[in-house]
Image 1 (spheres, one colour):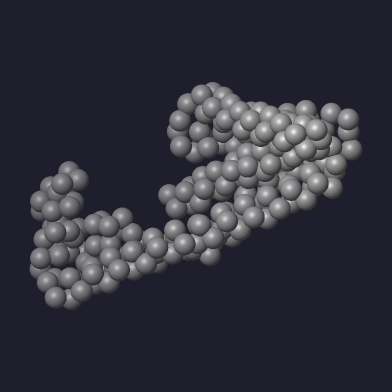
Image 2 (image 1 turned 180 degrees about the horizontal axis):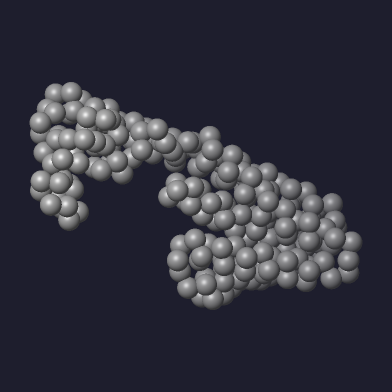
Length: 223
């Protein structure tokens, strides 16, 4: 359950990154030029590059984590094979530290060790489920998809055939960031209003700065 929540939280944050980074690019280009093709090209490039960058980063990060988990499990298995009595006492002490009486803790430790020693010790000592290790490919695909979905929001909004496309893009981004801020705050148990305002504020600041940069370079290029 905890791992599913972590993936969901990572997906929301990936979408949030896609929204903000792509919005910054398309708004910045829109500040420099009104040519739809230039804005679309920049936006699509930002979406693709950002999605693959996020996916690659998550794959490397989670692969490292998975390697660490495997190394810890191998070490735990070696300790169980070479010093079973010490490991049994260690497991008993863990349950005693958690508030279980010594007699009951010893009984629980013996029963769990007899059933599946590696699982019992890995979960209690390391917080690792041997049958549910982190999956780097799942992390990579989740990041790629979530970033792409988030990035599509400002890209589609800025390309709408309307006279106030930039304003519509800003409003769409603000709404999307409000949703991701609300969801991430809910998942993390944080204050929702503060998270939403902070999320929207950073998005608006990003777009304001990139739009200003685009206007500046657009003016210089046209001079």
